[in-house]
Image 1 (cartoon, rainbow, N blue to C red):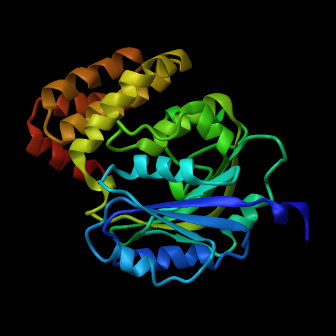
Image 2 (cartoon, helix red, strand yellow; image 1 turned 135 degrees about the horizontal axis):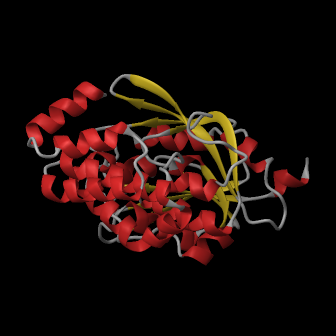
Length: 301
């Protein structure tokens, strides 16, 4: 037995009304080749049979916490962090699956007394398509990870293993974020700590229209909050980073109906740096109305 076999890990899963999918997600953890962990399931006040299903599992590593009211995934994860007893923490989602060797391969990369964020690639299943994220088209492992994260998120929460010190320093998940909580946390963490990437996809992630990831209004509010909280980081990184974020923000505003504000932010993106013809096309399309904007977006995709 190596010394790394002795490193205990706390794994946290927030759940809310996931009776149809939670069992396979839990089993993918209990079937890990690395077995030195506690599994903390934080039930975010489910009203279905989630609790009954969890209580059928007989495993001493499992700890079940039920919240009295629904607080959202970020706050539920923070509750799990507070109740965790180990220094290394991993996260899982209730509708995703870990590959059996996921945790083992991450623990092997732990360096004693060096707080680190270790993440893996994952396979995303969406609209009957299978995509490997990230790969070398998304990131360059030798470049500044913080700046690469400012260009967009490529790290899924269930792929992450990190030292608790990292979370304590930056304050955990921002519970005011209605979406993109993971991206906002990685941006803060990457200012202070190194990120280590395992390119092999060790998580299978499933996108559903009922998930939080599909809510358009929450997406727009999340963009607004990221710009409010972190605009100085984008501006300090350089005009390209600012322009890329503002283009994404403005495009989504226009796509989902706020053409006037979207047009203003798209213009700001161009003013910071003109890096793509798509900026100009989207800016001009914002004068045509939402129906045409959406139609042309589908055509361009």
